Length: 400
Image (cartoon, rainbow, N blue to C red):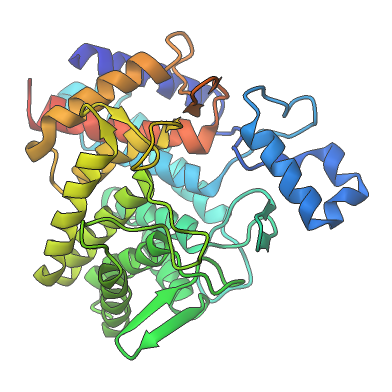
């Protein structure tokens, strides 16, 4: 298994580097040059149908409809984190993945690219997606910053700074905390509880999104002792903790159509709560984390190896779910306690979701069909980071 994981990762790494980390995304249909040349782009229902046609279709229509491969900021952040993990591998072991100088060069390259990709017009550094996005309630133009993308990019730059000591990396990461503090909307429950919005354009109450904002502020607090960031991180986190069901689970959010419970967003919640607790030195949050982790591991993995999307049905099987399992356990120091499920899920994923030739990963397996489109952000970037965490633990921290 040790050799299998490393060789599988190297095939993926070669693919991503060859593509220069550019690719397609499940939601990038509105980047179609043909669609943008028609009056349909003015109508929300047409935008929604067009996005869903691309997202749900197992056939890749993007070349036909002139959707270009592009960089996605969150994807770049995930790749950057992955290279930071590789840099920490023992020096005698890194040659298979590149020399220390080569890895450092890639870290600087990706960090600089991330800084170049910032959205403009806000009080701090922030990032969005490289495509217009439409759902039933909301339209967000391309590069509208979100707390989700900003949290991932900001944390990646904090990790890059720890290696490069480049003050621009730290300055930009800290500036992202200003964006969360000043530009996001807040839905106030009472003086001690509120939700961060998903973007500056809405007042949504999505649990994982609000927690991701709190997590980045807690990291920023660790560098600055900024009392406002401490207070906001604590209150936003406690709000989501209070929304946890008795069985340890969370629905997606507060809106009446957001009542599902899914795998990887639960993983986000757990990782964020653990990090806020750790960064703020607040052990009162750990009980919520422990209850949530028990529900997560018990309800989202069939036979301890097959990663479900939803807690109450098998399909779809989405690549984001196994990737986030490894990340959740690694980032919360829980791989040692749950080695068996991590190994089993990784082995199942390599056998069932990786293209053995190209090294790329499927997007989803459904009951009747599968989507083999090699989405760069959704599939490859998540698995790239997950691989580096898995290898870091199983091959260098806890040798087989």
